[in-house]
Image (cartoon, rainbow, N blue to C red; front, side, top):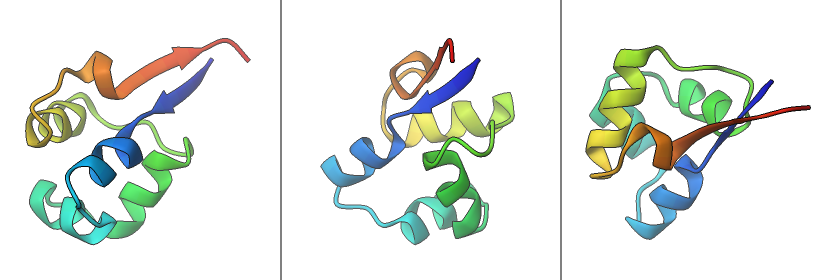
Length: 67
């Protein structure tokens, strides 16, 4: 399974940089880069925190697809 994320889309809607989001959720910018590129699966806590920033659900931001 591969994780697909819509973080980049939500950041764009909110005029937010990767650095902005990283600072808000307390991670490094590189973590956001890896999340957006599907190279890192977030912890449940981080997924909830990011979803809360965008007033979205985890399911809105993260889905899994069969490869």
